[in-house]
Structure formats: C-alpha cells, structure tokens
Image (cartoon, rainbow, N blue to C red; front, side, top):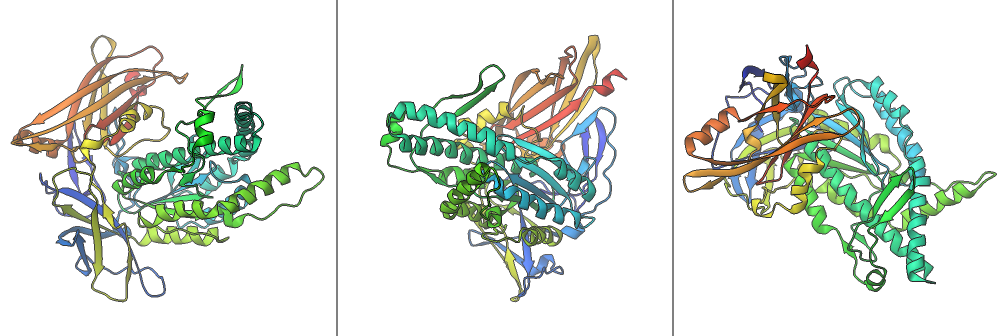
Length: 556
C-alpha cells in the first residue's frame, strides 16, 4: 500500500494526509502492489539503520522486481492526524486519533497456556511495559474462549501497565471453567465408552484441544486483518505455551459449549464415540495453518512466538495441596507435548519474518528484541506483475549489496485465489458483526447526516486498492457485500445486507481507482439505536473491513 499525501473525494474533501514521503501515486491495472517488511542486522545482531533503496534488490520467483518504495520506521511521522469533519468516521489507521504507524500487538494466550505460567509471564511483561520507549506503540490483547482488548494502540506506558495490572488473568478460566468443562465432557464420554474411562478421558481431551487449536488460528487471522491497514512494521507477539498441529484421536466435529444461568454448562455437538474410538489417524491442522499464514502474510504482519512454558517450575504444596497437584499435572502434560507445541510457534514466526523464542526464561529479552525490530525495520514495496488471483505462492528474495548484513523478511507472497473463497470466509461476513476489534483489510470512510422524515443518509467510501476486480475482456468484474446494522445498548443489532455486483469498463475502473467506491443508502433510524456498524467484504478475496459510526452528532 502507498501511504503518501492524497485527497479523498468523499462528499466533502477530506484531507487524508498519510505519513510517508513519496511521489504521487501511480495506479496500475495489471499489477498487485506488494509490501514487505525487512529487518537488517550486522554480524553482532545489532540493527543496521543507514540503508537506502539502492542498497536493496528484490526478486519474485527469481525475476528482478523494481522497488517502488523503501522507507525506515523512523521516516514515518508521528504527528497528530488531521481532525475529521463532523459526521465523518473511518477505520483508516492514519486518520484515527491514536494514528498508529509501526506497531507491536502483544497477545496473552490464556487458551493454550497453563495458568501456572501466567504470573511470571505477566510480571516480566509489566517490567517491559514500564521501560517502553516514548515512541513505541503497543496494544494488549488476551485470547481465551474469546478475544478481549486490554488496551488499544498507545504510547502511554502508564496506561498499559495499569490495564494489564487490572486484568485478573485467566486463572479462574483455566482452573475452574475449563476444568469443569473437561470433567463434564469426560463424564459424558465415560457413559458412552462404558468402563473404558482412560479412553474416554483421552477422547474428551483431544476434542477440546482440537477446538482450542482451531480457535487459536482463527483468532490470529482476525488480529492480522485488524492490523492490515497500518503502515510500516506490524509485530504480533504471541505469548503462549503453543498448540499442537496434530491431535489424537481424530474427531470430525467441534464441541459447542453453551452457558446459561438455568442449566450452567451444556456440551453439544459431541463426536460419535464409536467413530472416535476406532480412529487411528491424527487430526492434522497443516492446511488450516497454511491458510492462517496466508492471511497473516497478506496483512503484512510478523509473528513473534514466545514460549512461556520456559517459566514453569513445579510448585510445592501448602496446607491444601490439591491446586498445586493440578498445576504440576498440567506442567507435566505441557512438557510432554512441548515439541509439537513449539513447532506451531516456530512455524508461525519463521514464515512471517518474525522470530520465535523457545525454552527460555528471558521473556523480557525476547520482548525487547521485538520492540527493537519495530523501531528499525525497513518497508519495501513493489508491483507484482501478476493480474490473476490464482492463490499460487510467489517466492520473495531480498538481497543487499553489503555482504556483512543479514536480512530477515517473509519469503513468500500469496495472492488471494478468487476461485477458492471458502464457505467459512463467507461466514466471516456475519461473524465480523460481533468481533470486538475492527477489521482493516478493507479501508472505509463513512459520512452520516440527517435525512428526510427522520431518516439517516449514509455514504460509505470503500478504498479501491483493497478490492480485487478481475479482468474479463474489456471489463473489470467483482462484487462487494455490505452489512448495515444499527446497534442497541442491550447488545442487539438490526439491519440489512446489500449485494453490489461490479462490472466496469476501463474508464469507470480508473475512476474507481482514483476515488474509491462510494455507496449511498438512506436508513430509518431505529428507536434507541446509538450507532451504525458497517461491514464490507470483497467477494473475490474474502477480505473484510468494519467501521462503527455513532449517531450522537445526528441529534445535535
């Protein structure tokens, strides 16, 4: 993506001043703009900060590519963004109040981490947060049965420390909720298997682990799409015990857990006991991992997997040793599966241009290396001469003219395959309504103003560079799906879905590239609704953008 000075023509002339100095944008109809982040270090591992565009060369599938832009993290301005006019809202990172640029998102993985590791992990993380550089931009998340935002992107060290300190961790979830779930699940399996209690326990644990692995990969994809529109280096730190890419026995369904005040925990959709007992094959998640990595790389995000199990030590029981026995049993189980769990962290890191830290107690040192990468990264952009979205990986090879320098970067670029947009990707359109963070794989700007007879006139501008239109003779074709849902204080939503087919001639396509796609819709404002949630999905790639536009200004 190019981040240079430009004017967004959208009902009003909105000055969208981006922060990277560059020439005027050049739109090309037969190429894909590819952005990749590069870390350069000397022989001692120290960052190299004086490289220029001409010091790099880049090849795609062995063919030299012309580097369109090269800029260092320090070149990204940190000034405040321009103020948005009344009634205008956007998910464009460079125009948001916090104006994130090169960022580091830290995810505490409570879903896969034994709770015995949490205290030491949090203490070392707190120590790092207290020592952040004033220009470091950091966000904090926790990943349990759902993703939670502890703090959005900020340079405020004090606020980050305060929010992490307030977070109770997931001690209760790991020791009580998940434990209760496991006991209920195991009891149900025991009834099905009769006297084969060990086999029942193994089956129930495998089913739960399969669910955790799939949920972990799905959450990483969501976070990557949230970071997609941010310029510069995008680091995602996964502080985790890891998760297995194979699970025995094989199961073909995912447990559904329902919680209610009346019935408590209820477990639905359990796998068939007979088929599970006879299954000798492992559940492999390699294809799911590949799809997740494609999503992460498409967003330009680098994963840093930090193994927190390096902090685990056996605990000595006090008067009531039961909880310590549980903790030590969890520790033994974690150590027995450490190889497979480490493989997932290493795979995520190495294939996205990040680093993994395994079998180490030095979490502070690992986090410091991540922040150093963010401060001194280079971003290169080039135009890939491929106008087909066929989903075939392109190998990226970046070199430097200085032999003493080592480069680290993602080594593949995978364009979306429009012919293989899966049903799960289609389902993500509706699930995006409830995700607690915005999705920025498609950049949106909305303008809301009062209409006639109490209606709301909404206009949504969709950034053209995130839409994948395909050439068809002398036309460009594609489609956009749009959800417009009004939000209510009790958490309910009400709205509608729009399907917008696109079939443009060359002149209309060039206009789309210059101005973006603008969709206008008049809506009847529902009683007590306080905001409009906008979800946009590109049909050819499955990419999604979301935006919340409050109604507060409409009453003034």
